[in-house]
Length: 150
Image 1 (cartoon, rainbow, N blue to C red):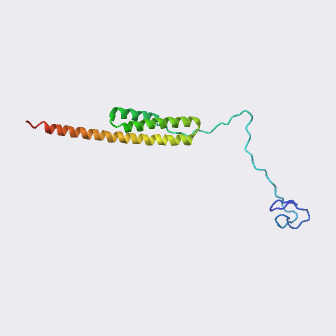
Image 2 (cartoon, one colour; image 1 turned 135 degrees about the horizontal axis):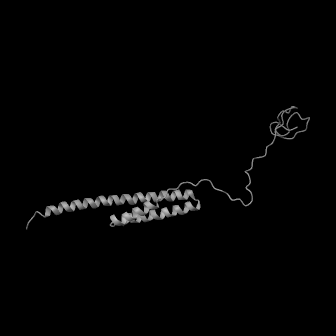
């Protein structure tokens, strides 16, 4: 007789289980042991089909636009151009990792590209504001000097 508590196979006339010392009474339901479920086997030659791909943002276009604007508008700030180039490299790395299926690495590089983009854009905006301020200051100072005669 099998023990209802642990499933130990005991003699039919035993009053207690030899393994766990649980009371055995005749007519108790016998526990059934179930085999663990195994994942279904794929047929030979069939390849694994991955699920839907994770959407990784692409900052390549924005990286190129910011780098070109940095070259054209704020060429006296090579830092923003360098940041734009780093954003292009990070965007390219993210696209490569995405195509290889490394979505976590692709997201990390895409976020890094976005960070470099924001820094480049911020430096460009600050440089543009400084350029406008210097232009206005030069016009007002040049206008004051034109009224004096020697």
